[in-house]
Image (tube, rainbow over all chains, first blue to last red; front, side, top):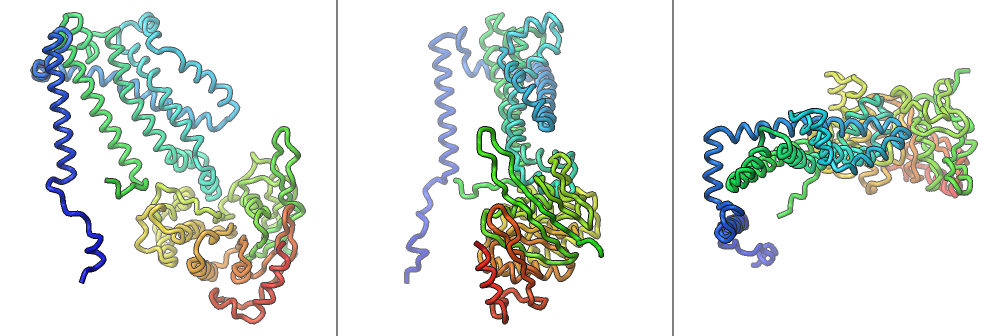
Length: 270
Length: 264
């Protein structure tokens, strides 16, 4: 006898699983990219396109001498200091503005206009003021990341379900508790969305800052290699910078998954 | 004579008029009633009769335009929105129409939320919360998030979240309107059982006549906008009541018909 299960049974297992197929595809695509890279190096010459193996060799040398880690440390330090300051300010300011709609109305246009200033245009003036140390770069990083965090958090604060706030107040929650337990928790998705956009910007801004004024850092390494017409060095620097951003992204994703673990997930997405 | 436990006197409400529009109409006007301590009062009225607005004003999350609300003789209603005191020092609980559970908190953490914000979380109150969870059949679901629960379970969670901190007055705004008939009957039984245990003062808003009769000591019928009290009925049925059998009781049909005629 045929049961209904048999009639609508799932199709037979394919020869290779879906996961393996995807992995093979990804590896294949990587191989194509590497071949194209090698071809470009052959076609345009080493001055314009460093061959992948030479870049790999250089990365190994940089790692072995420890130079790479000093540069990463220098870049990471400036990006992190600037980013943390921008993040704290960008997250706290909307909470302050929430308390007074009038102050918000007065201040918001200025924040909006100041966003229009091309931040890198400030660099010469910042060097004038603060010299060529870390401070001008930190300020550039802050300027490049603050707005993203601020506007995301502000949008989040404005989107908080007012009924939840009323519920908490009726139950005796102080305004401080409302801010911490209802509003802050509500805006987590917005906050992480801002972080994800801002983090790569922070590293990017720091590297550009290092092009302009620096004696260390990944940006300095790239710019210094360019001055020496060392294309392999330029490429190696770019690879390091990319890896840095990817690692930071993975970290933010991990933090986000932890913070937003409560959210419904589409379990059947495949 | 002692003042009534909770008294609503000539309460009125109109929302602020938007610029360039006709003056907004009165939602509530000249509404008065009193509630005794430990009394279960049900309010019934046509939809759009300002029932939620009335409860919001009693809970002090919305300001009255005129009139007074007195709590043991003290006037508490403020017409100045800035001096509102939501929940008036935790003495007025409010079970809203939507469950308003915090989506990032599990069942148990939602139930403990009021105790947490009031700084009253200890072994005793925690045990009380667990008793309530058991009493409404949510055992085993303590670690579930609201989106993983059924509508009825969310209602129960929201109900015991208010019961857990023991406010002397509890306002309920059609708390069971959005669930199916069977779940509703179960929730009503749960509520009555919990109420028999503590005998809180309850003001329960509904648009379901049978529910108003089954639960209340007294049922107040509201008019259309601007809302006033149209009629008042003492519900003669003995407690403890069995919600499922209420239809069969002698006298139910006549009360039901009278109220139905009064609601326009």
